[in-house]
Length: 61
Image (cartoon, rainbow, N blue to C red):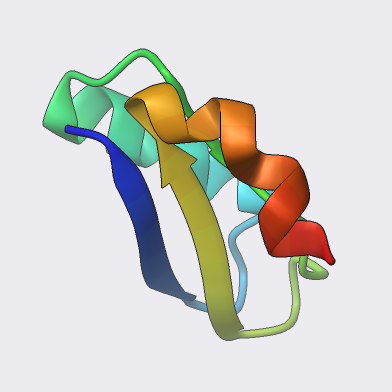
């Protein structure tokens, strides 16, 4: 799986916890977030998966 996935992060989870959860559930090693949301905040968290991790700088601008 390669690409950008928008995840609705629930309040109470850190951005790192969301990434760790998805790594375990999907069995994908290369996955990361393009920014952080406060743990108490909920909202859309863009994630880059697979070879798209090399393009994460494009999502930030």
